[in-house]
Image (cartoon, rainbow, N blue to C red; front, side):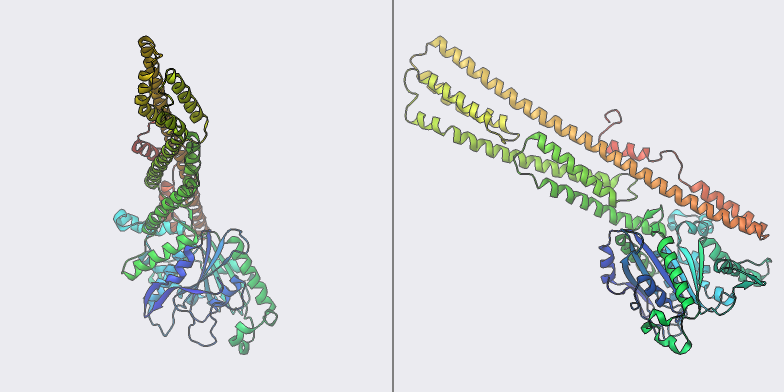
Length: 601
């Protein structure tokens, strides 16, 4: 992407996704690392985004007191460190813009930045004092703006505990303090940036109204963003040059500012993780597009974005697309066959492309716990295979009939010219007939209908053969009956061969289906086990973050608050996926729907 584009428009307080931007995201199949910057308007947010993009220009930098960024702008660039990943930069419109005068709109912009990002950069100016923390008031409203579970699936108790679950799904948090002019000291002791941030987020003891108000935003930041980092930037240039920051070269900027900017970018590049949704699933650009549309449409309709609903909606879209993509792989592969082919070749090609199609499906699908979409793909492939089998049979029959027509042309001419209408003619007829059948059998690439077509051909020629037999005066009645029995035996033998060919074809088809089901089920099992590992890892990280916060509270003397966290921690532990294979019932249901039992497998 050469330059940023608007992802979410904000027109007169109404948010709307921009089709051009979502279409671009739809073409990104790589995992995305999403970094969003939020903060008060005119605090230099766009400059940091341009630095991360490795460009001097890109996101608009304003030299006036007017906010330059409206809505949410996006810039997709190759990730400079993680190969095979895309870095998605989101620059949000400034919070507290006096021209906008709508704090509700600010709250939604802030919420969308959290919902879409894997790292949230909060940009402020000056110091992290009480005012700076209070400017981040939107964190106190997140439980009203974001839901983890669908309303129908959550109780009042769940609603109260939802903020404990946010830690599993929220981005890591980076506070960038701009134009800092003070010494990094606390009570005369020198501290680093992270210690400075943690000191600013320290809670006060007490239960009066003022203390509760003071603690609320700090508690929210600590609870929702357990992974926190701070960078402190000095002023990059003298005040008179700040209006021309975009046109200044690196050498014109303060060396200390450049050093922090370098460290900031390095941290973002190395530590910012891939965006994930509930369940620990890595998000691609295509999936991010679905999420953006789902969240914005929900907000525009007056609803509250729900993580669970968004993932389910995305799963439906992605799984259906995964079915179509897998089917296309199968169709393209099988279309490479030149009919007719043997049943063995047909079977081998089917198994190969069926496997490739399933792998393609598995690489894109997610949350198909019941196997519904995998079954849809299996049914669609079976239908396509049946069609290809029919095409192969039709072409085989056509080729075999044409071959027999060509081979029997000489006999037809002899019959027409009376060549066999003489004593000993039947023996000559039988010799030519046997040579014809032998030549037919020698010819390759006749396909699966070879024996059946030959059977029908021999039946058609039986009347002709009998006529020649009856007309041959050299043959006695006894010999004639012997010949008739030989013909019947040969016909019966050919009929058996045709039936055997059909039986083998059916057996091969059933065998292919069983193997296909076994492979699909194995792939599904492996995928679900991998998903469970991701979910367990995600849940364990959340528990560890809460335990760390609890230990910190105990160290600071907040015993009551630490004890209150115990129930949250127990709830998180209870929700962790168990080690046992909980996907077995899903496999049983899937196998039953396909008419396959465990004994068969």
